[in-house]
Each structure stands twice: as structure tokens, then as C-alpha cells.
Length: 473
Ligand SMILES: Cc1cc2nc3c(=O)[nH]c(=O)nc-3n(C[C@H](O)[C@H](O)[C@H](O)COP(=O)(O)OP(=O)(O)OC[C@H]3O[C@@H](n4cnc5c(N)ncnc54)[C@H](O)[C@@H]3O)c2cc1C
Image (cartoon, rainbow, N blue to C red; front, side):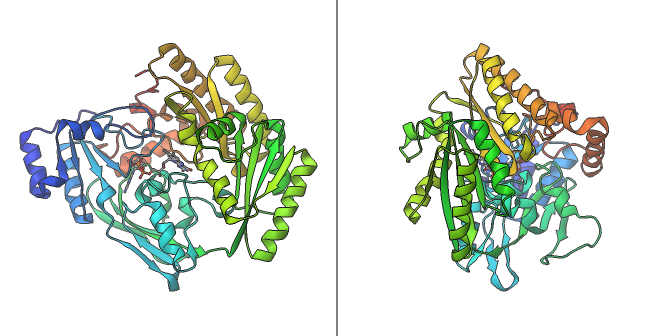
């Protein structure tokens, strides 16, 4: 596909749609600022447009479609898979300024939100009414709901509460031809026609631009308890996951941190994690106060039975918050080891967690890479993180091979390339490995029917335009 470059005439046409020049950015420093996400590719757009209204998005998309200009939706660019990167130049549509709606309707248990609203702000707004919006990516303080919807983001609460797609009732979407479409509605039940809402959620901005969403809220549990269990072998920690989940208790969070994560966090900010452990499980149960008190003791017993070296139940809110803060510190802490973090999210069936840990150790030794593992172990969603230095060509080549092997292992064990970070550009070359030729073809047919000119976030998900892995750029 050849895309048209944005010349002076086309830029003038953009100013006619968005006369407010402060919302059309073309300076070199702006182009550089918008060339990154939280992965490590870098591609400059030709222009950045910051719409405030659905209608403005529609006009810009119609214009881009008419002149075959690629258009890249972007929230806060915290994607770990290259999702918002403008790999073919064109227009970056920065939706982070569309924050005008954050309305909670407590009687309907719903919230209506604009795409640029931060996920953490939705949590706070729901809590004011004794309600909860469960999806909670670790980046919730800085990422947008638009980005969460496009990536179908998860987080620690996925085990009990599910992920973003489970809390979307309706969407307003600007299609690649610029039409404004409403899908779903405000009701929990809705079986009118194809479920386009579910198709768009997780489509990574390749099928359209989400300009508003109706989210489902649930009652906020009255109480929670937190437990930290330390293990001398990571495989035992992995085996404890199934043991707990078959005991009749469904924790709200069940996270794992390996030795590398523990040591990095303690060096970054001492948080009370045991330095002599090979791995820890960090577990939360929520619900009625009398139930959570009993359940956390049962979880402790299960951990003991399977061989935990030590167990600590948090006694105060302060202690709970400190432990959960430690979990959130992993990302900044491990980049102190080396500056380039390759954060994967290969996901396996629960029974395969111990085997996946064994294979990750083998991969670390085989390719001599710094590999630390954390993750939402309760739903099999592990985060093997390779930390490297992008300036070291040889190390990046080894990291690239290690990542490919991680994907291969996850698929071989009956899992998936991505549990929550999306495919973007980083995993596009591996799609066929998981989906097979026919599965991938069917997805391409859908994309081509929606976006025949391939203007909507081109270069993502599908390998036919893949840039390949970007490690060595
Ligand atoms: C420290 C850290 C921790 C993280 N933890 C988690 C975690 O626990 N769970 C998890 O799932 N992810 C996690 N992430 C990944 C990331 O935060 C999520 O993918 C998030 O949803 C991205 O939101 P964003 O606003 O930054 O979107 P962006 O990164 O800007 O965009 C993400 C994708 O969405 C598309 N997009 C953005 N807005 C729209 C829109 N309105 N309409 C259509 N498409 C759109 C973009 O084109 C792109 O493909 C983490 C990232 C970091 C850096």
C-alpha cells in the first residue's frame, strides 16, 4: 500500500477541519515526542491532531480515507507492543484530550466515559458511589480507557473479575470510512445482531476509533485481605496456584514475583519482600469481612501444605498497600538492571505454569539473557521481562531469539502469544504460529472489509505489513 504524504495543501485541509492550531502539531520536537510508546520502536508521524469531539474525528478520518493517509489512534502511549506507533508516518490522532465525559449512573450501575479519561479516574469516580470498575492494568494511573478498550487490557483482577471486554456494554466508534456507529447499549443483556462491541474491543485501533464507551460497574466488595507467601523453588510457587484455585476459593488477585523482581524492588524501594525467597505469591481475597478473614487463613494453609517457606498475612491497610505498591514497582525497578525492557505476556493454562517456569529458566541459560518473571499467575498470564541494552547489538540478538522461544513455548503448552498487551508490531510475525493460516486469513478478511484502504493503524497485528521485531533498531 502506498500512502500519500501530507504536503502543504493537505495540511491546510486539516486546519480547515481543526481551525484551532494549538491542536494540530507539526514541530519537529512534537513529532519526536509522539514517535515512542512503552516498547522501544520509534517512528515519527507527519502531523499530530488532537480532536475533542466525535464529529472532529469523523471529519479527519473521512479526509484520511479520501487521500489514503494512514491514521494512528493514540491514548497515553503506554502500549508495550508498539500499538500506537505511526510506522507509516501519516496522522497520529491523540485522543488524550477527549476527557469531557466521566459520568457515573449508580442506579444503572454504568459509567459513560470519553476515550481520554484515565482508568484510575474511573476507579475513583465509581468508588464514590460504593461501586467498582474492576479492570485495573498496573498502568491505570497513566493509561486511558480508550487504550484499554483497544487493547482489551487486563491486570491483576482478571482472575476473578475478567478483563476490559467483560465490562463494556456499548461503544461509539468512528469507522475507517468516517461513519459514526453506536454498538451495544446501556443494558447488561443485548443480543441484537452481531456483537460488534466485542469485535472492536481488542482490535488495537485497526477497525475504528472509539470516541465514547458505556462501562458496566459492580458493587465494591466491603473488605479485602492480603497474604504474602515465600517459596524456595519457583515451580512450587507455580504449583501452589492450582492448589489454591481448586480449594473452593477464588482470590481477587494472585500474583507471582521471582527472585529477580524481589531483589530489584527491594533495591529500588525497600518494601518488606523476603530476599532469601526464590519466588513469592502475593494474594488478595475480597468480599464480605467475615468471609475474607476465613478465606485468607485457608489460602495460607494451602500454601503451607504445598511447601511455602514462610507466610505473612498483612495486618493493616498500610501493610496491604505497601505490598501492592511493591508489585507496581517492578516495572521501574527492573529497568535499573538495564535500560531496555522487553516485557512479554505469554499466557499458559494454569496446569502448565510450573512447566513454563522450567522452560523460562532454560531459555535464560540458553541465550544468556537477564530474564525476570512476574505476572498474574492466577490466570496464567506471566510477564517474562528481558532487560537488555539496546546499544548492545549482540545482546539484542540473543534477546530476540529468547523472545521467539518464549512465544513458541507458550503456544506449545496450549497458551497464547498475548494475554493482555496486544500484538501491535512486536508479535505480528508470530500470529500464524498461534492462529494457523485459516484463522489469520479470516481476521484479514474482516480487516479488509472494514478498512479497504488500510488507513486505520496500518502495520499492526497482521504480519503482511509487519516491520519484524524492532529489537535491533
Ligand atoms: C508500567 C506499565 C504497566 C502496565 N501494566 C499493564 C497491565 O497490568 N495490564 C495490561 O493489560 N496492560 C498493561 N500495560 C500496557 C498498557 O498500559 C495498556 O495496553 C493500556 O491499555 C494502553 O493505554 P494507552 O492509553 O497508553 O494507549 P496507547 O498505548 O496510546 O494505545 C494502545 C493501543 O490502543 C489504540 N488506541 C488508543 N486509543 C484508542 C481509541 N480511542 N480508539 C481506538 N484505538 C485506540 C492505539 O492505536 C494502540 O493500538 C502496562 C504498561 C506499562 C508501561
